[in-house]
Image 1 (cartoon, rainbow, N blue to C red):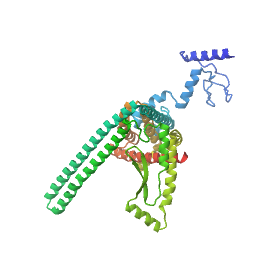
Image 2 (cartoon, helix red, strand yellow):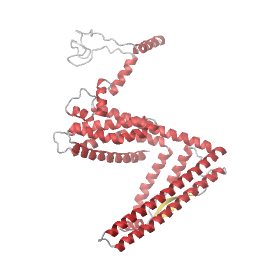
Image 3 (cartoon, rainbow, N blue to C red):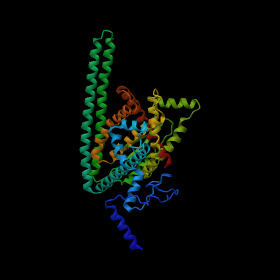
Image 4 (tube, rainbow, N blue to C red):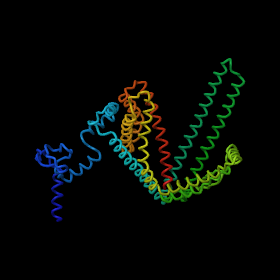
Length: 455
């Protein structure tokens, strides 16, 4: 039996590479296996069933499975170029009933969404894996004197670079502020309707505040520099500051515990975090601004206690965030479990946005707008999926291109499908674009909160 199976598999495998020859249909006059009607050709004229014997090689069966899922026939070669380069013509074909030449729009939408989800999941897992590898390498390096010395040297160089950049930026901001204030002062002094005393007073306030802001920025830059140098000195002395050199698992657990330790009392205090020179992290409480404390007292006087809602929401949220930080893989799994469901909500959102901007054209129905929305979202999902699997060096370039290409694709779609003028299509593109971006942002926030609630 095993020999027969191996022979059959070898025969099917070799048949995969053979040139397929077309044979004349030999079943004319035979009864249809489904309804019994006498066959006159390869398809039954009564029920439409294929009269083929369906004997296939293994390779052919695999190809049929892929083709059945993605419908990779000749229509794909017509649909994809039109989707990317002539989206208006493709949408118009769908709306006017010329559909046999193209892949059905809903099938294209679902496959594009599926590919996007696979690509996003791959990108996130790759980024997490890369970050953990880097963290492990860094922890191993810090475990040796040579590694600690190298890290200390890197921190010192980085501290000098950051300090100099901050000081330069602070000086530039001060000089620009003073120069702008001087220009405004001179212009206002030439205006006879302006009160010269008030003009000089306004200038004096700016001239006094700009140097003070500069000094504050300088003090902050020097403090950050001193803190980094202190950490480098500890490393050079063979000591590890608290939290440095931890494995990714230890770091996640420590961060989760810090999140759980945050206090949301609602009694005029918020948590504060202080990093000492030795790297130790201390948490404490800092008083809320007087305005916030007054608002809380006013709410309590009216019978509302915001501290209860704050404690409840803060407790639920911080515990969920802590769990997500402890087990990011599970959080990502939950995120993608809900992600493809919520992504489908973009379809009616874009369709309704199109219906809103074309409400003065009653010849177009909601069905037509949904067809156009499927094309737009298919383009967005496919192009973003491609960007997510590109090498890191090409990703920035590709997504920068998409920032320009996606609105252009929307503009071409509206021009071709609805026959809008250039000005009208440009205005409608702006409305639909921002409505989609805003809705997508809300969906992302909702998805993140929903995933947190599920872990």
